[in-house]
Length: 99
Image (cartoon, rainbow, N blue to C red; front, side):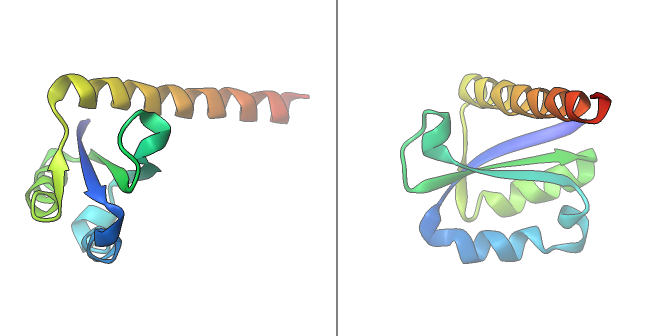
């Protein structure tokens, strides 16, 4: 599965919301997190888009107009942190439903 990770200033949230409404992009998995919670400067959002390569490429092209792609090492670190967060949440829900 392809993915991309961008940082977008909070001031551009309206533009980001419009971008995420695009028919092809909206069908992909996307996560928004306050950048400060993952070690980045406050006042911006981290935007992760995962899914079909064509849709991720479309999202990248549009995100470049309103945000900044993170350098590969930083993007990999944050991607791993977000995946860990998902796995921890899934494990917790599994315990909830098995008790």
